[in-house]
Length: 444
Image (cartoon, helix red, strand yellow):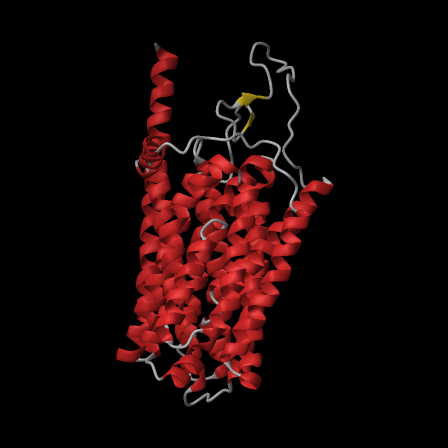
């Protein structure tokens, strides 16, 4: 995985079919030959773009996980088990994982901004139908359609940022998008919790749909038009070649696995935590359980601050810190004290969002071509981890209680540590080989 420091390179306009150098290499002075049209943090366009994608992230996460805080209420009303109810979350995240790659290919042809807009419109329309679902089967089916629609947003957003934002600001920009995810996840769960307590889970899902509608309108009005997008091809052969190139890259494979494992922890914990808190010894009402998700504010801070963390510790150092924080939170959540559980959730959330921001920005940085597909593969792995984590977490809780869910999370954490350690070792070996090669060349 790349370290925080970068070697000097010739800047290019990304997103074009053939990257265009911004400086001439013919002279040491590197005379500028073209203006860099990408957004800098100080520009008004950067602020508009950040606010628009923040709103899109809010809508996406609020919709994607809209049933998660309501699982106990859905189980009670529809007479289904925790494992069955968890499919209302897993179906959405699983469908997103399946459709994110083909929809990212459409974004290469029709544009990131266009695809993100249509994704939000369809997802919001389905959200307004979901409260009318007559049974759990229809509810799961509609949630799967909604997840498939939302698949057009995350990879397109990452590719849009990679093309429209200057490299030094990319981690910060992606961190703000991820922060919007955390705010959306938090606000959606809080709204659903309190509305469900007053008027039932169907009314709460309708409220989230209306909130997402407002966010979608803000996104469309605020997002600047793309200036560096160049339409690509929809050829299956070209797509397969691009995907094969990314999957053959050891660094990208490690990043995909890290994203999946981080999300396995997060999906398991937040799918099951509602069941734990409504049971003894806590016995909390639905509204209070929804308010527990205020801890997402910690994720907002940790993801938005990921850029500074990487600058201080390097990308691997930031991942080690994120995974250690997550593991500490899992262990602390075993407490029978509500304060202990809340503290554990704070650490899990902070570690997860920091790790996700670092890993996802590393994908955008590592992919030299086909950034939309590179990001799509990451999102596929990431949401597959959410789907698997939610389902396995609910099964573990049913079989062995919260302790079994924590054990599942810790197993995923060990996987992240192992992959990161392996990446560190590979980087050291590569540096030694480079030094030896340099010495041979210098002595020849």
